[in-house]
Amino acid sequence: GLFPPAPGGREAETAVFYPLPFLGGLGWSFPGRGFSNRGVGGLAKPSRLKEQFNRLFPGALRRGGGGMLSAWPLPFTGPLSRPARENLLLAGDAAGLVDPFSGEGVFHALQSARLAAAAIRRSLAEKIPAGELYAALFRGHFRRGFLPSLLGTLALHARAAAAPGTLPRPVAAIMQNRHWYALDPPPGGPV
Image (tube, rainbow, N blue to C red; front, side):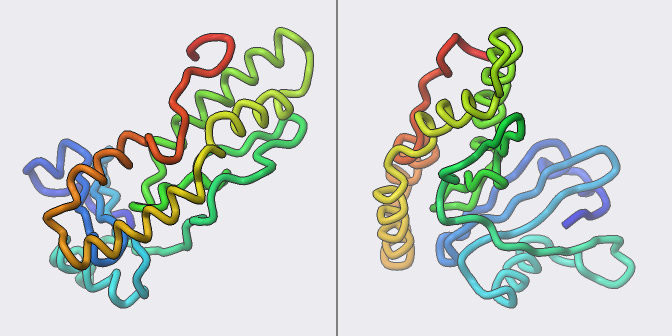
């Protein structure tokens, strides 16, 4: 949700993430000009997520606090099989690019934007629809190993509940996107 700026501290100057392994997700706070975007996401029911939001950001939902809270489901089913049509290119959440462990999507949105830019640049040079080019780049980059990653995610959530102290290395591997995505630069060079 959008709230008045966070008063001082690290939350006022940087993006802060709060792991919520028991809920299968995370909390966040992103500063902006005149606002702060704070929220939680996970595989828990809305009342449980709201409880965690109040724990992480005490008082943010009080009357007169100026905050607006909203919710929507994330596309945890994996990358779309058709992310483009002619010159319409879908990126980020719209293309189904949500990390199955954390629900995080900013990194994937930026990666898909890079691929879209490469497709558009080549499309303009070769006078062909960008959608065909983007779809090929997208499939080569985002469709690798989604099912194994999803199954691994379920195992990690179980591990988080049973032994949270054993999570740092597996979570680091996921955060480096080695399980789901290929991080090779797009054909035609970096964007």
